[in-house]
Length: 90
Image 1: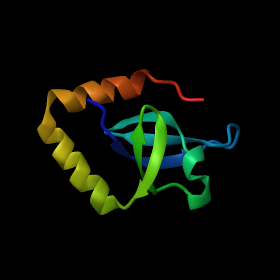
Image 2 (image 1 turned 120 degrees about the vertical axis):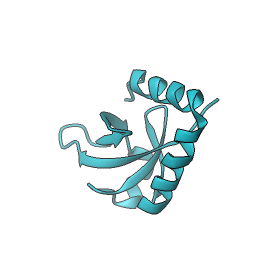
Image 3 (image 1 turned 30 degrees about the horizontal axis):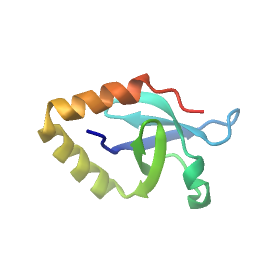
Image 4 (image 1 turned 180 degrees about the vertical axis):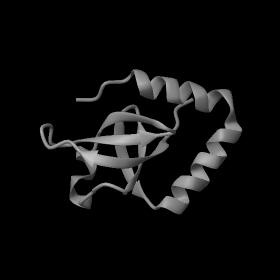
């Protein structure tokens, strides 16, 4: 099963445009944000992430509700977090 996981942007990478450090369920990792460059993303913004790419900007309320729902999914959610940690986008 493939899931989109909410993450909060911590910082944009000045040396690698289009990349951002994002907190995903307590773990920080690099995420490609190029698909959302027109959104004017910055620290504190929430994005929906799939396989290392930010696909949509979401608000914090939606992010928290989604995280709560994903926690209830158990193993499928843990598998997606594991897959997210092993991907290395652009």
